[in-house]
Length: 102
Image (cartoon, rainbow, N blue to C red; front, side):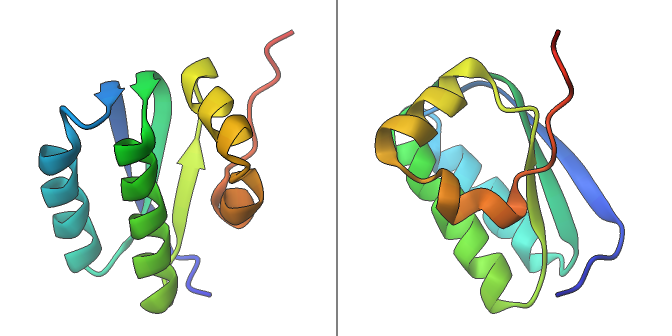
């Protein structure tokens, strides 16, 4: 798998049905640029199934292209949806280590 340097994109607020169309365009553009990238999820306050579908689509597309998508700094909202939908394993290889919040 390609592990070259990557671009970091922060997602803030909602990743939901209300923002899905805009984020789909942005993710498609990022994927089309041909580079690895990281999605910083620290400021995601709401994640619904539409947002989760976008993350799944992005990961699948990046894997198909032999590239790397990292997810980092998962907010509590993101972690809760991952737990409820049992998708942490699907994203396991793209989840960057979390800082210790002791």
